[in-house]
Length: 146
Image 1 (tube, rainbow, N blue to C red):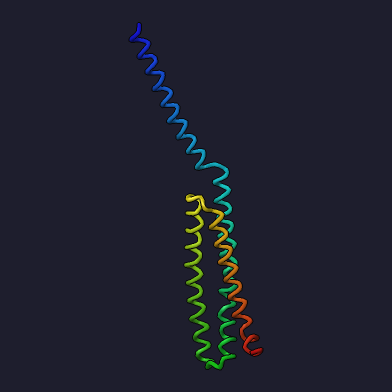
Image 2: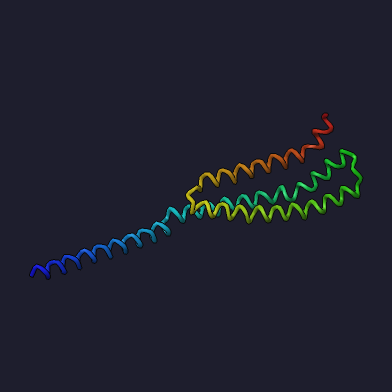
């Protein structure tokens, strides 16, 4: 009889351990697909899409602004044309690399649980890009004032 109790009690413990393992697996699965994690991915991809769209404006306006600045500095018009055309291609490649890198950076920030820090950094970089682009656009006016 005592042997039966030991086996029964042992089987009962094994059952508890299996339930604990399944419970932990289920808990991990729920953590992985939880609404909080989905919300973080939604936030990350929303910021990525907005930043990528916001970077199109400097991409389109920077070559024209640089051409105006170079014209004010007295650079030959053929040189300005070449700089403007190659500048657009190089800025397009830089935009593509920045877009892909930003998506990777924000996506991996979710698994590292650094979403807020990463989103703030992307927003700061976007603001800096806008400030630099605005200064380049205003540079002909600033050069005339000096």
